Length: 243
Image (cartoon, one colour):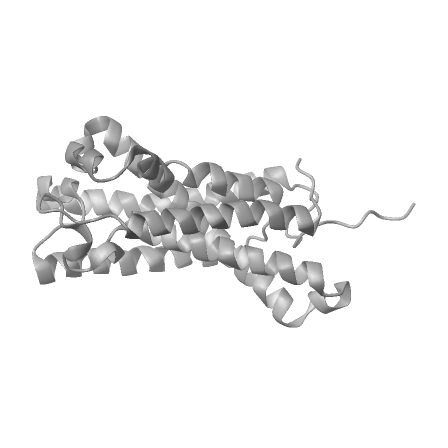
């Protein structure tokens, strides 16, 4: 079972993670498009890639976490149990449990699974000349250890399973609709693997991808409960009880 830390310690760790994501996001947006891979210049820009959406999500989430840490450091304890501070903590937990952890984990697992099966389906070799190796790992590898670190150092309150899974289902439906619209409007598939699949294979692939998110939500809930058995749902450092 993990133990909570001081808000100053939280702030230090979260500032480092937030800075890393801001740096990674900046590096990603600085990549130049080429004739071989026009990328951001095609319809939908970077916003059609789940990897980029996840990067923005993680950056916004840790920016929110840093804000919460600062508020808990400067405001008296009584002011933190209601109003905006409490609302921000609830928002933090909602984003992490329903979006940040499941989607970040999905990006990690789906990318590297397909990559090791046939990298040309998800990350063609010519991208090695466009995207630095460190940035590839920042986008597809580091996200999972950082999500697990966040889960380990700070407890998060999980809502009902139905609410969480429906939230993920809504996100999946919106993103799937966006991917299909990009293909309809510009005649391009977001990922190479979609070009290789038959219509039936594409339906199965997208269906499995969407369904996979539900077990990842449940995995996050189980890990959170296992790590924080006696303090699950608390917002931060626990006060010791007087004997």
